[in-house]
Figure (cartoon, rainbow, N blue to C red):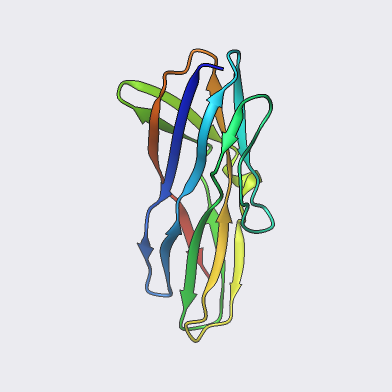
Length: 147
């Protein structure tokens, strides 16, 4: 095992007339001691928050799902659309995160009255065996529909 990574991925706060979305916690893959042949680090948050990320062969310390907070003055449904992938960078090096839609919560029912609901965000970080050591970060842009 040769490389140590600390990877963070943050959501972008968005405000809408019908409701409000605010970042609570960024998606964080933890510190990774990468298996020499590469690995995929996964955070599955379909049913709520995940406390730690998992890998096939690499050693992962810490990490956890992202979380966004949603509120609305009126009762409504919320749908979250995720991109197919996001590129994380560290200096001139890049890695890719995929699988947001299948590993994250994608909808919520808001009761109105400013009551807060949280949605958890997961993803799969793909690390090639030759990935450079570093702290990788990027921005996850969400499309959030209140209806």
